[in-house]
Image (cartoon, rainbow, N blue to C red):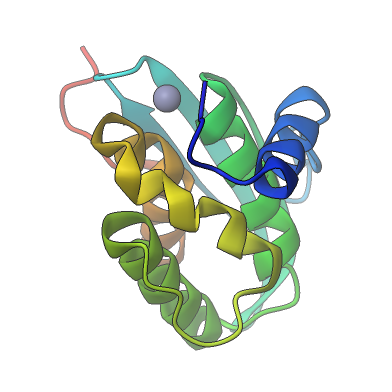
Length: 151
Ligand code: ZN
């Protein structure tokens, strides 16, 4: 389905899609946010347990396409233990990557999403979880939505 993505990248995405990491509700969550991508039907909810400015623990639940699930799964691994400012920076790197294909700095495994920019319809799938985590970090502990058309 993604002929232009390298085999390795496809494998990482498929692995995280089939076996999403941190895929459960988080009982000690202090913040949460929902993300909804109506174009594809992806829905997910992130749970964050903050310790001051640091994300102590993070998890997600939801359903959607392989890209959106893999992206959320890799996100939880990438931001655990990071500060709000660090997550903001990673968000900007991921946003640049999925919209232009340009990899800025060391993004680790998240580089698997650089090829997504060739598939405009998939960009929103890949960035959904990132919008949700930013919403969770910016909110005041109340559930928020990245989309307003959830009716
Ligand atoms: Zn999707």
